Image (tube, rainbow, N blue to C red):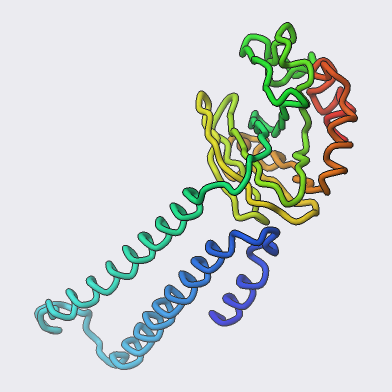
Length: 268
Ligand SMILES: [Cu+2]
């Protein structure tokens, strides 16, 4: 049963890695699975052994009849368990720190990602490389302005807002993560990326250079009744295709982009 479970999960619990980096996390997960799998099997075998060995005893295990617990055995077991769990925690934290602190090899492509019940919106700065100003009082998805972009601001004219994340292959992407209402979590299983998005905070993460393809984006934080439908697609395309995709959006497209039911552009 245990072997079947391990086999099943090791094959299907994560999609294929879509980036050359990210292998460190998979290695750490595999290490955790093996070490804790050994502990799990050993304790279950010990449990079965003791049940079988003492099966004919009629009395309950009372200290007066079974003797005092052996302090050395208890201490040994506790020390091993503590070392194992602390060790795995430290190794995992060090791995995450290494990934987060690796200097970027190139200037990243910047994308703003905003979670709002129950959708993801993606904004790119356009040819001027600058995001236009936003104002929470202007947020109105039914008016085609789900992010509250201030249309009077010149930098906002070429901002592109979409409901799918389109990025060029082989480039590092800088994600500036926002949440408009409650805590969401930006989760891209194929890239092994998962980061909470918090209202009022600008959280920066980096997506590693990725192979072309279409990948799932989900919200990994239970954020309300519609949480289950808060997903989107990540489309990684060749650089030329990416430029062509950006050019499809006319300047000042913010007036046309927004709510899925009223917006053709955002659903492209
Ligand atoms: Cu959410």
